[in-house]
Image (cartoon, rainbow, N blue to C red; front, top):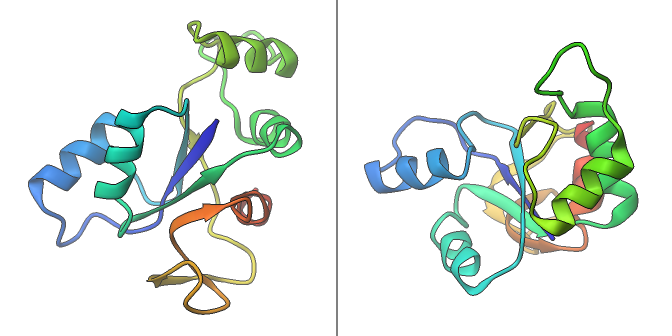
Length: 138
């Protein structure tokens, strides 16, 4: 599975880009969504690579993300992390909201450079290092 985090804000974006981010449920800065891998998703990620960070999420980070930042749809119920992960893998309707609101990363980021160009750059495909970025944002 892939996780996508919106890094850029809402100013000076084209209408096509805003619509794409809106449909992915990335409506605010530092919001994240979890997506299944497919060729269609890869095309979308190439379109938003200058405004978002994405990569493969491991199970340990996924559990932390759901546990700390997951919001249940029904406020009276608690989140069962294993059940939510099982629902994600099967593609069923989730018991939590389909996005996560994160904090700005501890230690800062360079939000205008692509991953690999400098030590704190995060835009584009972060591959496995996205897990470290998520942990800094929890």
